[in-house]
Image (cartoon, rainbow, N blue to C red; front, side):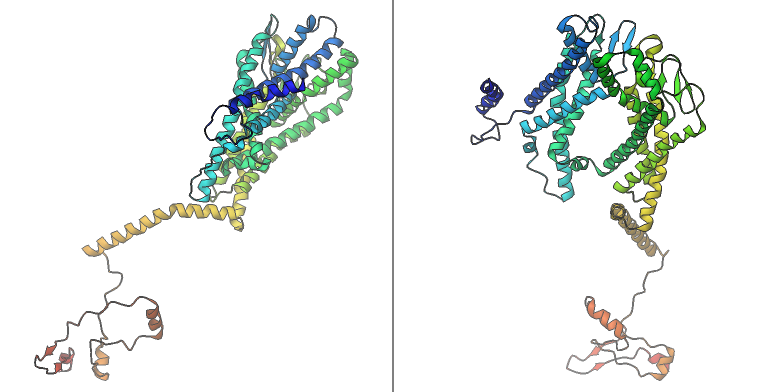
Length: 553
């Protein structure tokens, strides 16, 4: 049997080895599979393993539950497990009188982990590292790095689509098979949720095969990397505060939680499954606590609200974890201190944004800090929308926080704090002048404006030249006449110098002589026009006429 499985596994490679492929020679011992084929095999493997795990848990519940709770026979067990698999991707269901949208976020960890492992296998099976471009532009190192980064991003996107497309199609087929009169999965939700989750998990897995975790962020540009890091830090702080609040509420109200568990009386096996179910909904509770910290709060039914400003409750579902909810009525004044958590998270995010990608100008850093707030608000609103939903109709049609309210509150709180913190941190870096990134950014700005300055200098010179030609400007330096000219006082005391063609200025200073040695030699001087040169053609003498003779008459 093992030999048969080995033959089935290596059959596609044996077939491909007989097909001549471009770029491959006959000396290759092992032929890699095409990327779409590897993606299809990985998608089928993920679905098979996931359904096997959930079918096992459902079978245990079917054995422990009363007869008829999950349907009659093993086909009902498989149908229930398949619907749980679709719910793990946050695909909703239509039921008589309403819909089911409040799905456990913790259950998403199972398909995400399996898809990540499938993506790693797909990358190794298709040998994606050999698909990096061998020819890169022979320019500056920065252009080569950008070209390699673009090639890696394209490779990651292709691998994610190769895994996500067949995975979504197989999930749609499962949704059509498992439909019945009571539960009917929304086909659009099934396709979109499976496609998005598989693409994200597969892309992250392929990026991980290229390099370590640190190199994954380096695939992004510096500015985008700073915003991603700041957003992740702000969300981590708010979610950690929400987790602390949930655990504290469970500890404080543990007696009420235990009382609700006793009312249900699930038994030993049922108690274990109930504990597992509450653990899967724990991430939903953490997101609800984050919405509580942000200010809007959350609802536990139509017409209810749990917020720092007050609590309005009615009849709640009999889930033991809901026993940790606060009592109805006004909240103590000290509870309002939790609203400071988003501002602290925004300050930390703003400092991270500047530390990763500082700005050379004072007004640029606060804007990028607010962009980090926008990204944080959008992500928090998405988590809030996914964590809530409905369980049927009527009063249970509204459970969880409102996504748009959480998005708006978190954007303003985190964005303002991040903008102020980023501006102060960037000012401090510029003021101290010890950050090389700021110096490089300022040098880039100076280099970018150099052509403008040169053009301005040329325009100023042209304007000055035109003004000098029409007589509106004085020449920068008067043209020097050759020779040494005596003034009126020197004419009476100094002898008249003899001016020759090879005359040298003996009154020049030593500094001028040294400077003249270093610069280029002056062009030959033109002959003097103020001296009359009378030369005898028969070899006579040269007569020099004194130009100052008129002053001594």
